[in-house]
Image 1 (spheres, one colour):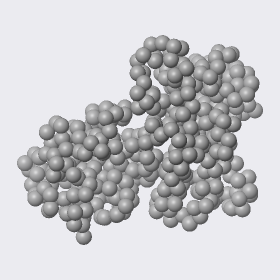
Image 2 (tube, helix red, strand yellow):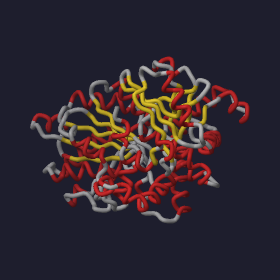
Image 3 (cartoon, rainbow, N blue to C red):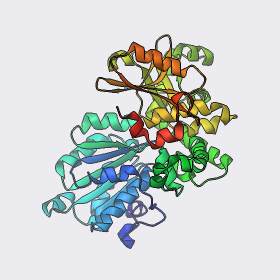
Image 4 (cartoon, helix red, strand yellow):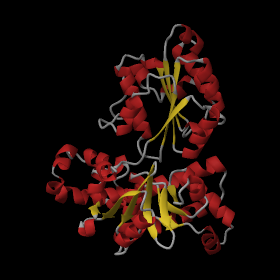
Length: 427
């Protein structure tokens, strides 16, 4: 049975009237402004993302904004299922009884709105069907659901809450957000990027190593950053995935992450990995699926002209952020080209690469148009782009070569590509 204290510990604004400044950061990420457009609509909102990317901070900012707009403090409930799991109906019954002093039905008849924020909601059983009941019965109750398990949230919400939710993903910090958090003026940098190169370039290397996590932006000690990232990985491997899938061999999960971290963008050969590790092919396939579910790993597929054909072909595995590569690496500098490829894949939300006698790192499809991107790691990338352009001559509208720093052979320095991505990708 839930007690009032279980609710009060998450909701200090019931007593103070505002969210503690320790919980609300001044900097608001782009997703905050996107979600604002949907706050007054009836639809439930799902926010998913890798652990420690700022989902809870975002929720507190949304709550603070509601309070500023005049919503009564007790009409806002926040509850996290991350540490202690209660039934959803027990939490909501306790909230109505101990805090509101009225039922949702009574408030509905008064046209009084209530805002409910559930963190790590996927950890409580049958959450989607229970929330469907509340959603359908009480249009005055607005639900915000957050979690670090993408497939669980997305799949179950589609199955049971179809037409009732808008889903958003809070990704690791992008380079622009990182620079703003470092106190840089983006507008000035973009007005004259070459003038700012000496200042921005060292920050780009920090971003590549450990700048994708908001809490590490101001950290200077690399070992501290490394341990933080390893802790995030361990939390997912030893707690989140086993809880969702009843996985026993957590050591295998860790080993698979290490394999990808040694070379982000590797072609997944389940048979070879299974043989090397003494496991079945199905086990390896399943465990990579769990890692993808947790957002620690991202898969992209060999482009074949249609999603179905591509899904049946080879896959490449990347990390949810190149920062994980830094955390596992003994010689991070040697992995910079692969970490760069990883960050480009994440930045453009790549779904495809191309491999058929030669390889192109990223294939973006916009209707009938194609954009090809190669990340400079050796000296053959330009030739591969030319071959691909010839092979798909009627569809390729643009090809890009992205480098760590230099602009030789028409390459775009990575930091510039990340800052002017929309312009470079415009067909």
